[in-house]
Image 1 (tube, rainbow, N blue to C red):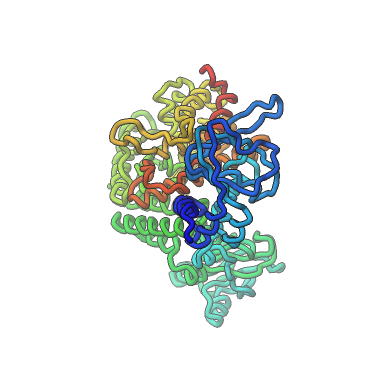
Image 2 (cartoon, helix red, strand yellow):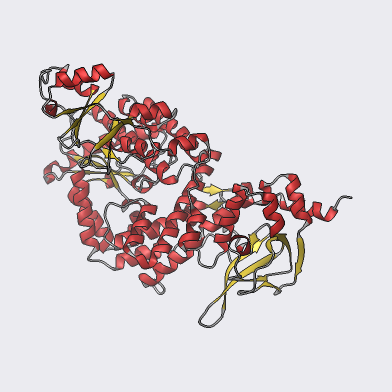
Length: 639
C-alpha cells in the first residue's frame, strides 16, 4: 500500500537542497521516517545545552528562529531565521554534540524532523549532500568566523572534472636538463641543443645553480642578426637571472608565473630559488601540450595584434576561458589573476596602437592608470572604462600644448577599448576628459584638495580614483603620486570619517525576516542589486581600512582583507570572512553576468534556486559586522 503522507513529504523535499541531490527511491525512504512537528508561535524545538536529537530539521511552513544566549546575562540574541526549505539543527549530524543555539517558532510552523540514521544510510557518503550540510551547519553556527567553519562556508571547492585535475596536478618538468658553463662558447651550446633536439640550455655555476638560460630565440635575435659572433661566450647573450620555482608547483601556478614574467621556461630548483641546485626545467610547450585552452595563447595574440579587431577577438576568447574556468570551479584567485593579466595586456596594446597613430612621439613621459574594478584587478566581465593619465611636469607655457597631445592619445585609446567591448564611462571618468588627464603636480594638487577639503563630490570620486593601478608608461610618476597621497592622508583624520560614512551608505542586503532588499521603483524595480547591496560595502570597507593603515600596493579587495588579517591578528577571523565572502559574491555576480549576457549586478531573485539564495545569504553574514567595526573605529555613530 502506498504511503500518501510519505509521498507528500517526498514531493516537498525534492525541491530543496540537499534532498534535490537524491534519487526518488532513497528520498522516499527518508520521507517515510520523517517526524512531522507542529509548532505554535513561541514553541521551543530545542534549547541550548539540550542533548542532541535523532533528527535534523527542515521548515515546511512558517519560520523558526535560532537564538544565542549571551554568557554574561543569559539574554537571547537572534542569529538566524529559517523559513520554508531551510535546513537547521545539523549539529548532531556533523559533530554529535549538544545544541549551541535555541530554536523557537517565529510563527505558527510545520517542521519535518529528518531521521539521522536513515538519512546517513541512504545517502551513502554522497559528497555533494555532505558538502551542502557542512556549509549549512557552518552558516547557522553562532560564530561564523571560526577558522574551521569559515573555510567551509566560502571555500573555493576543489576541482572535480578531468580538466580540473589537469590544471591542479603537479607540473611534469624535464629532469636532468642539458646545461653548460657561463664561459662556454655559444657554438658549443648550440651544438648540444641541436644534438638533444631541445629549445633551451641552462647556464649553471660550479654548484649547479642556474644563473642564466639560452633559448632558440636568443640565438635567432642575437647571433643570426650579427650582434654577436657564434664564438661568443654564452654569458654574453644568456637571459639572467632565471625565473625559478619548486618542483611541486601546479600546472595552473606555472602558467600564471610564465604569464607574469613573459617567459616560456621555468627552472625547477630544490628550494624554488636560483640559489639552490637545478633539478629540471618546465617549458611553455609542456603546458600547452597538456592544456587545450590556455591564456598564454590569448596573450600572444594580444601582443602580436596590430589592429583593434584582433584585440577584440582575443578579449572575447578570454570570456570563453572565463566561462570555462567558472564551470570547472577553478579557484577565483586564479581566475582573477589570469583575466587581470589579459585586461592589462589589452590596454597596453591599445595604447601602443594609438601611439603609432600619433603624428609625433610623446613630448614627455606619461603613466596610464586603470581605475575602479580594473585598478583593483577585479574586472572579470566587460564593464565601463575608468582610466586616467599622468604626464610629466612641463613649464606653464607648454602645459596646454602637452595636455592636448595626451588628450588626443587618450581619445584613440578610449575609442579602441570601446571597440574591444569596454563601454564608455557614463560619468566620463576617462583619460580623454581634461579633468582626468593632468600633469603630476596637478594630480598631486587634485588629491590634496579631495583629502583636505572633503565634500560629497570628493568622496564620490574617491571610490574610483583611490583604486588605481599603473598599466603603461613611466611608473615613477604613479609612485610619486602615491607618495604624495599617503603623505597628505597622514595629515587628515576627518577624511577617513567621511569615507567611513560613505562605506555605510548601503546597509545589510537582508531585511529583518531574511528577505532580500530589492529595488523599490524605477526600471530595476524588484531586482536585487548585488553590486551595490553586497559587493560595494566590502570594497568600500577594505579601501578605507587599508588607506588608514598606510598600506601601499595592495588594491584587490580580498587581498586587502587578507593583508588586514595579517596586520590585526585580533580581527583575523572577521577579515578572512570578508575576503571569502567577497570572492564568493564576485564569482556569483560573474556567473549571473555570463548567464544573462550582462554585467550580472542586477538579479531577478525568482530565477535563483533555493540553494543559490541560501549561498547568497551566507555571504552576507560578514557585512553587518564589518560595518559595525567601522562605526566604532572611526566614531561614525553621530557623524
